[in-house]
Length: 298
Image (cartoon, rainbow, N blue to C red; front, side):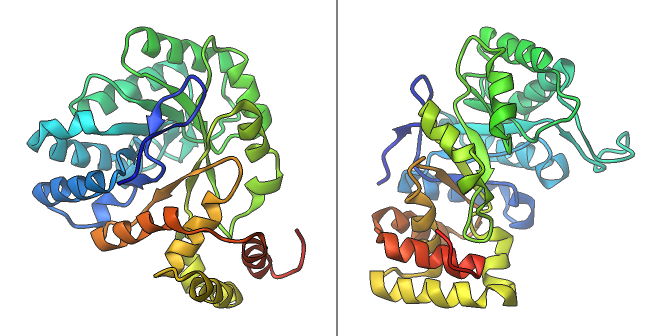
């Protein structure tokens, strides 16, 4: 069973793998089936769940909350992460999709999430995307109000550059505890753009989303050489699937990311949990990097 780990010096303890629920509405589960699925990954030690207000056209949080209402004891076994800061056209008042990080929106979004999850606190709230109109003082005011009220225990960001992260941090009396970043063999920009370096510097652990490249890793003909290399490494290591090799590749990064799992299949979640037992050599790691990039560069 996986053991919880601190993700920042003054941060919460999360499971080393995170269950992502952004596709919950596509899984076709009944509320009782959702309860069973949550219990399954909890029994593996995957206790941290990732949400956002906009997931499933604003429906995923409430659907997850239905399960928590059916089995109230689950809440205290979970750490709930959610995000805000995007407005989509799923709501008729939004003529176009846009970012929205003013204080009133953050406060209202947090209240909505609390209601959807039938809980009195969120373990972690993230700003979902950088907003060109973000006023750092406004965001900080919202964060401090939610923190003082005990409604949100910790705060972070998602997809922020190091400069954007530092700007918001400069306005806060407490530490941001993570930056949720896209990290996979098919999306490696965070490896060298300073984002993961900043996480190491501040001793915070990033969360890694779209670890399998949104399916492109398995479906895009362009990545056939990558699939071939992953298969070679799978055979060398004794891994049971290419998924395990990819997650092990991400887990080898020194910033110690927490990968987010996106599958709604219990067996596949169990398989991913096995990636924590898999160790790659440096040469295997760089072979995968080269196969994904298509050229030989460290």
